[in-house]
Image (cartoon, rainbow, N blue to C red; front, side, top):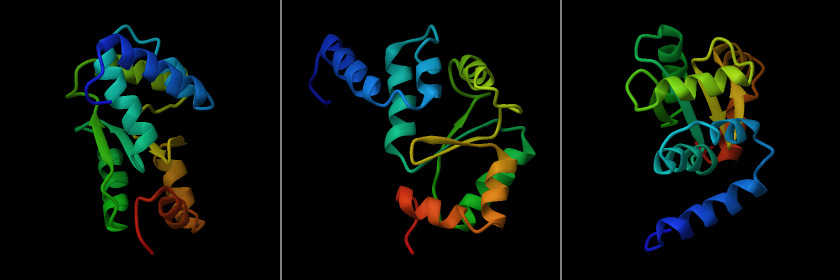
Length: 140
């Protein structure tokens, strides 16, 4: 999307994410009144990066989830909601999905997996490693 004008980029962005409307977080997130560039970066990360984690620097549970993922050799894209612009708006979008507590919120392969309970459950049931492998976050 390098040399496109803002209008071309917005049109391409809108077309791309209309096709991926199965992820309701993105449709809620797109309603956040913020700069399109910021929305684009985060939504593209969710859809294009194997693992994305929404966290807060003060949340010990988020730190635990990050550590678990790193122990698998995964390098998630991490958005610290208390440090990024419009972090509260992103937190509100996650809350609209019924995601409580809001952090950590883990996306694997473009889909919201959930928080610490869901990630730990997947790990204990031996589903997390294959899910991370399928997403391209780790090698066998």
